[in-house]
Length: 608
Image (cartoon, rainbow, N blue to C red):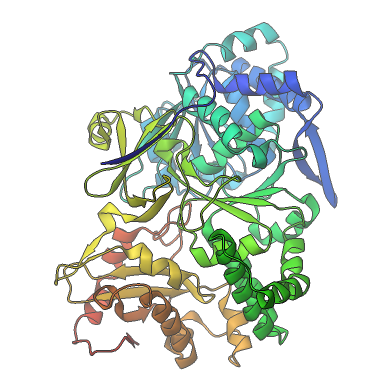
């Protein structure tokens, strides 16, 4: 059994809770901007002292409204400044937040509210509150529903004016490290969501240790980030709390269609994103260059960037010809992409899914070091992450301080340490099944290099065993295909089948530009595009690229392009845009059966 242990670099404080992180930050730098909110064409800073005062005022309102210590308060909202304000107000009131994805259906909301025992709900909009209203009759414990857009937070603040500062201070100090801080429900990609009990210590100790490990990212003067992935997910939630502790200025942009203008005006020093965002940035730039007749230049620049970064990582000398090309392309291509991201981005933290070495090297040559990490809700987000001082593209880095990672005999990744959750809420059977002693069994498969850098190779439950007995990890094939501009999502299938095949959807955002660049009508429907010869040839090219990385027995021999897309609304994606593999395989059983209804020949083929 291979195991790597990284000792904590900050002494544990079992009495500390998350509210202490804000109190300490305000004592240290009360006038430092902790947040910025959109105002006209720019941003207005909010200092630590101002944020602290707003948190206390809202906490008083919750107390006046009857919220008791330990009460569960659900919150459904987009990624805005108010998210972290509400989060800390709930902490200061001594209560426990239950975040709900803002895209959740009424049925999903009902399950989470009922299972958690929530007594109140804060909803951002009338639409969010409407979904809660649909199921409120089934939820006798829910006493209050507050709607932010109708001014209910201001009303709470007004109602709380008579609550004393001493009462808030008493409430916020009730919780110790071992107490529950939040109840976060898994995204439900493999069944009904389970509530993960994350403690105050999970966040406090991980934030304090991560701030040291990521010193160059979060503790450099003027550090700032623009959050656009959902704060209901543990990844952005943890970063929000880490930023308060480290004094990083945080802005928010919930509308990803407005992301580029927001990046241009906010000018963050680091980003937090999932791989799909980096794929979109790359693919959009490529298609824009293609439309302007500069596609050949962009592809040459990308090739040079990747080659340059790979040589640097391996410690090899850069040939003079490549150095000259790199300087030229830096002026023509790379500088423009840096400017599009605000011009100051130096680091980007990536998680949730594998990034791929090609994109990692490309952005590295742009001057953006992508620090790919790995974790789950059950590990309070990060368990491992590449460091600014040493990173290896293609890995998810070493364990963070205070965290141990090992591989079981079958390659499953197991985690122990300051970040591992306490239990699944009211589910002792699931809790027992998830642990081997004090080691959490992640369900993911991986390998280590000699320095303890972890590489994720697949998901244990997703390993496909063909009729010939070959074990195939779908992600190794799916990720390269998904990187193609016109591909939306991919699911590789073939369990107990004679060969591997794939279901593929097209990306409705990227498709019109690609079609126009290739002499086809930009308004072609997904159904027509799925049957188009040029589109099918492009998808075949993506499949061939993926197949080149595996043995013939593991390669995709057939694929079908579906005439529709997979979305959260269709029930095929989770709120964090992960595929619901089992649901897709079940819903598209007919298409899969059709793939295997005829024998395959010796070459890769697609089926209409």
